[in-house]
Amino acid sequence: ITMKVKNFIYLPFCLFIGTSVAGALPEIPEPFKYGVGGIENGKIYIGLGSLGNNWYMIDTNQSEKKWTKIAQWPTVPREQATATIIDGKIYVFGGIGKDKSGVITLQKDVYSYDIAKDKWEKLMTRPPVSLAGHVSFIHNGHAVSTGGVNENIFNGYFSDVELSKGNSALTEKVNRDYFSKPADDYFLNNHIISYDPSKNQWKNLGTTPFPGTAGSSVIFAEQQIYILGGERKPGLRSVRSWTGELSHDRIKWSELPPVASPEGVSGAYASVIDGNIFLAGGAYFPGAAEKYSNGEYWSHKGLDKAYSKEIYQLIKNDWKKVGSLPEGLAYGVSLPWQGGMLILGGEKKDGKAVSDVIYLKKNDKQIKIVK
Image (cartoon, rainbow, N blue to C red; front, side, top):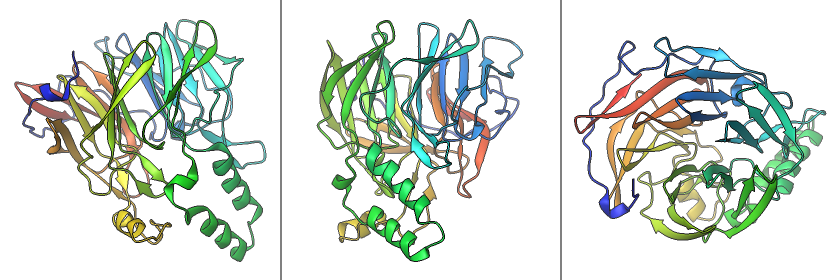
């Protein structure tokens, strides 16, 4: 497909939910959020996050579709990592997990999983920038990443929280010092890096023309990348969305219309359906943007997190609401599958992970939601 905004067309939505519809996949064996996933040759792989060290695979080519366990993750369990599948191997980058002392820490190791051998291997490399809450995609056999938190600021906060335990006044000061800053002072990553598995080497692809984000949604189709929403700082979302055209390890960026939610979203699901860009779900703090614009930098203090169920399509120069998920969801995995989008797991408004698998597909110029 040639992903050009001017070619996007409107697709009316209808909502269909059922458990015995052809094409639906069985539920994930465990509630799943903040993990990673990938698909190759009709086989879907998911792991990490709320699954801990567990990984699962489902072969959608089989008449009897069922989740089976594969080799366990061999090291520190983690959230907010990314995974890419290149030449029969799954590569996992970054994330956050607890170190030996029990403190939440950004993880810098890289592991690969050999699908044929059902075996994990620690690679002798580390990303040149911190990767947690970042996005990754595949281009010309390389894994490309950008975005994510700043290692020193992030690790420092959780270290200070641990040291202040038992001292409520000190804990309050640690939180106030951490959250009461403008977005620029979190130094979120806007470097673009590329990993070549064949050489076990990293390459510098420059920086984005926009500030780094965490928890953005990413789509890569043909030579076009889309980075949608995300966090500008803890508790404050971004409404900005961008597209970049890749050519010879260079990216030409253009800004897209802002996402439809006035607060923006992070942890949303995104994919291409019939050549069109879709964004679904995501989480945000209603009222945080207004507080931030009024100089209240701890903008989500006292606010309840909301979970969107809206489905938006990018139509010409605007995001249009074209449907709704069964409930508000965020922080799961979205994958392209059979011309539609799979939504795997996520977190709902009570903070609990779900094991649902939802399939958004096109059928006779309409989109159906199959759960």
